[in-house]
Image 1 (cartoon, rainbow, N blue to C red):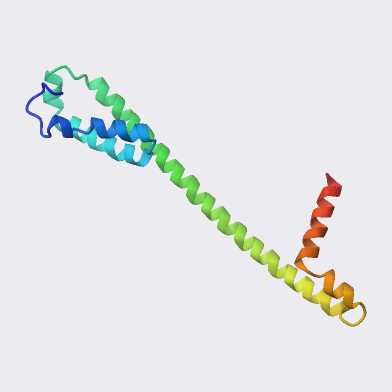
Image 2 (image 1 turned 30 degrees about the vertical axis):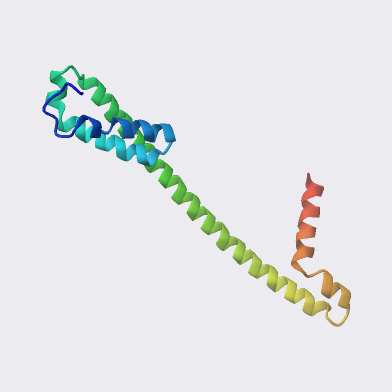
Length: 141
């Protein structure tokens, strides 16, 4: 590359160093951007580079790597989005469950408010419901 002329970009600014740094750091988004820049520079200077012995197969290998990387990045983004959606759905479900639990606890407290004040105060709390769930779960195991 140093011997190829005329280049549209100085050899030092071609992008190879930046691609290596991004790869070494493990920053795949930055690597994707730097590979794109390198490929643009390779395409713009293809004739000069081929005249000095740069094989087209090397550029094509980088292009394939770039395509695979962009597909993997897109797939990762889709997984993160679906995970965020699942988390939001779970939160809505748990909020609904908690609202139902609040109703059950209020009803239980109302039923035993006059007849068994200790039971009304202790058995119909979130702590007590969680204790019952954990006990039943341990018995099933």
